[in-house]
Image (cartoon, rainbow, N blue to C red; front, side, top):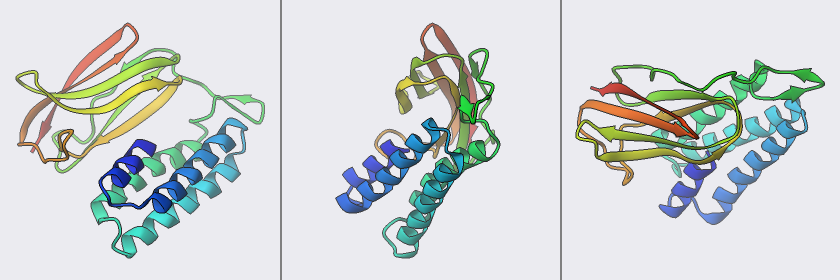
Amino acid sequence: LIAKIQALHNAGVLNSGQANSLIVKLNAAAKSIQKGKVNTALNQLNAFVNEVNAYMNGGILTPAQGQALLDCVNIIISLLQNGGLLAKTGGLDIELPQQYALDQNYPNPFNPSTEIRFALPQPERVTLRIYNVTGQLVKTLASGSMDAGYYSFRWDGTNDGGVKVASGMYIYRITAGSFIQTKKMILM
């Protein structure tokens, strides 16, 4: 999510103050989550939602740009409300994944966007990439170290350059430590 904000800043959509304001809210929410303060984190995430909505209403963000940010943060809010994001909350152990998993994207077939979800039972260096049927890299959705947990990424049918790709079959592949899995999806 922070990477999406930084990309919007790098593209000149958000100025430094706007990008930093959003990132500060996310970092504050992350610290609250680590401390087990769910309600505080939810308030900080709701402030993020309000700011994104203000940027959309003010014409700073397009509806698509704003919705991409809101979709990500709404997943976090939903997980917090359902107890699925925290390893420990108020002394209660919340179940983390017991095994690696790469779910089938949803919806599939899709247009204009789809969700790709996966689970990590332990911290790993993760890459989640999309390829065309000839094996050419189309987009890198995730690349970096991630904690154990459940993750969801949205692909909007664009390549790494932000250009819409053609309809057809695409392959998404996760590599997390020694876990490697590939699945197919169809962009209509």
